Amino acid sequence: MRTEKYSTINKKQMHILGAGLFLAAIIAVFSFSGNLWKTLKNSEKNSDILPKFSYIDSDELNRTLDTNSASVIIFDIRPQNMFNASHIPNAQNALSLGNIDQYITTIPPHSTLILVGTQTDTDTLMQAAAWLKEKGVSFSILSGGYEAWDTNSMKSVSSGDPNSPVDYTKIVFVQPEKAIEYINSPHPPLLLDVRSPLNFKQKHMENSLNIPLSDLESRKTDIPRGQEILVYGENDLESFQAGVRLFDLRILGVKTLKGGLENIMQR
Image (cartoon, rainbow, N blue to C red; front, top):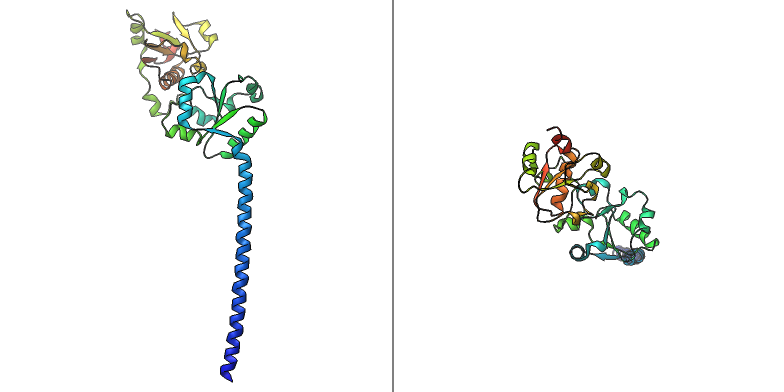
């Protein structure tokens, strides 16, 4: 009797255990299906966004800039401090443009606009891309953001950080006394004045070419090649920043006047 009783209890326990396992399996299936459905819905949402935009990688962009840079507009949406630290040559920083809506209307119809962001802020990148698309602007997104460009050691321009040891290695300084000898030598350098047109008009060194610091990238073709250059700004910082940018723009044979124009005018 006791054996039969135990046997009956064991059978009941087995039935309960089997039913529990079956129920757990059903729940697991539905749970998996639910998660799968959510994943598919999220994928659908992502596919609704991402494939709407075209992408360009660093190598392709570099080739395009080498062959037809005049038609390329680099629209950099990174924060100003990141842009100042390093950016693609001739890039426009969106935060410094002021009226972006007005700027967009000035883009030539056959230009290639490249949107540059960061890998760490894809939300802002997607928002900017959606906005450009809404405005009817044709563009491509730089794959991997500026980090990919920088990692691949592509050409970049620094605004010139006086606290950067790297930027200081790009500069060959000339003291005012040596600069005067240099200018009066049989083969004087090209004098490049990077101050504002207003300051240039008020005073400048004779035979100087005036290209404001902010225009160096866009007007680099106005700078004669194959000739030594002595660049100067209003002061030491402006001169330093000009020297750094010229180095980054691959303009060779540049010397930077220590102290700027205000220093040499005191001699």
